[in-house]
Length: 121
Length: 295
Image (cartoon, rainbow over all chains, first blue to last red):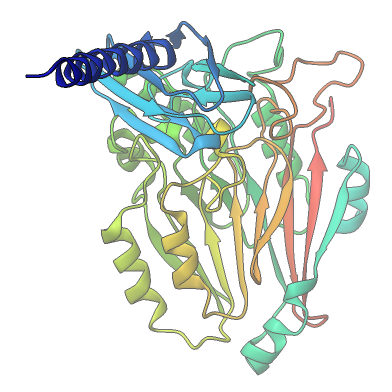
């Protein structure tokens, strides 16, 4: 192989490797994973911050009974089965403060079981 | 003292809401069968709730409302309770005790008939088992002086889902009526998306509304949101009633849907019940919001 082809091959490999690194870093930097617990009658944390346009994954563990997760402003909802981790994935397309709440009646105090997602620009 | 005088005296700022969509509906549909009548809507009594800063008269407010209704010189044709008769509890025996106490208190009503609906506080934790033992079915219909009343259950499912089988039942029931027949729906949660952020909605309420849309004269009375509220989906009117235990804030007006604290300067503010008068001769329904007074 001529020097010319060696240079092209090395450059290609280097570029491919570089793109892989960039992709991994991009994914790592922009995909926010937040662990949340749900139990009578609270989400913890109850305040979550995310960035507009960047993927957000909530890993929600219901610790006692069945709950629900409803984020009506983004038309997102999931049943939260006790003992299981439920992944809720969304990419906020607007900034502001948005209420999320349990929408499966879970007892006295159910109405208090809510939190706020703050989406920044 | 006649009914209107009573309302003026008993009301803490009683409000008259004329339901314009009713105009012409009853007389044209019922013809010679038409007859004036009225009923009373009480809602969200939450018997068993204990919170002195929210309602220091939690043991007395319902009794005052019962006395106020009994004080009318002309009794309503019937009284409806649109859900959350009792405050929820995880203890099944306490739930039954509260229902028994509630039933004793409202058993003092002089009105000839009483109809009960469940709220999520009554029915969500046991799928309506205790409620049905004390008050009967979760869904049913009745007819009064030519008006067809439909009671829907959007609470025994913990998420408030009405479900396909109930929608099919409704569809079968409505087939018996012409599209100009007056229909009144009684339920607990709003059938439309009033404020889903606070769970003030019924997830599949649209399925019910779609069944009702062909009918020209439909009115929905409900509770759940602890305040007076009026809304239309197409030509269908939806009227929410006040609570008899604690008011809740206007939808989205504050970060949390927490009860409004008691104001000693204005006791019982935001609490009350509703008089629904079918003035058939004048072809309209009047809704009158009646407050609770100290005595």
